[in-house]
Length: 405
View 1 (tube, rainbow, N blue to C red):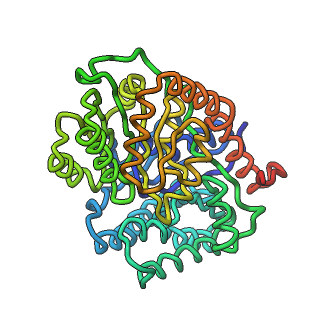
View 2: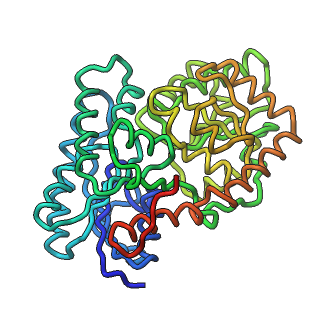
């Protein structure tokens, strides 16, 4: 159905279509009859400044340097703002758009949206992927000082500018309503469920276990707030304290902490047991997760992680894998009885929960079956995407949809 409305999606974190949530949103809106363009940074394998994929126009700019300290973290904001504004202005002249859909972090895009609301009467949709003030605290620690207060102000202005908010879970919706004072009837929960057809298991390859009996996988970003240092110390407990030498750990992904984590692995003497693959293709991800016996979510409890939905949790569930996680609010909501939970930030208990799963094949099988069923019945993109279409139809007056409670 042609709706004759044009949406400009802007994102800073990852290139598109590598950013899974943004790409699923883009294709879903396109299929629902909207015209979609995307502005994003370039990245490995996504270096073209412009290309059209599945009818979606993708504009890319050179990414900022990797974030290594607070100074670079602050520089990302103005750099991405300037590059995005340049491309948005070009798109406004060439194609036009009726709504700017901004994915955070950062929370600086409200100023671009405000400009085009004034000049073109464009709508502004705030797609809140992270709580930026809490992300800052979780990444760099410290008290709620000036930088935290500045980020809270930027978040406040974003809420004030937005016509609609998309939240990834109920915790984020509640944050928008309480901290942001944003009307609850304009906040739609659009969960980042994987598309089942994209994540399909393949025949397990025993050689991925590197001669060990068990394969334990981590999949995700490797930044200071993601808990890979906790995981490596848990692995040391499993291997050196409990003397489990029948395990191979594959840590899949990359990020700002990758080099430091590799050095920590070596300092702990875990090279024989821990493989760090870096970023790999979707096909290789399928191979590893299909062969895994257990998957792990070592995200520690901090101001961000406790209320955030972890993509890795949903991806493990899609492959029907049991998992070990720290007992965080939203991780527990996603996995429910499909995971064993350790006391938050307790590295020893986390290691013990891994061993408990390895020693109980029936429990592993039961958890895996529950996880796959929950994804298929409730949490996959095929279900959650309906709320995205309802939100946009409501925004443009094509429907009278209201957010689910």
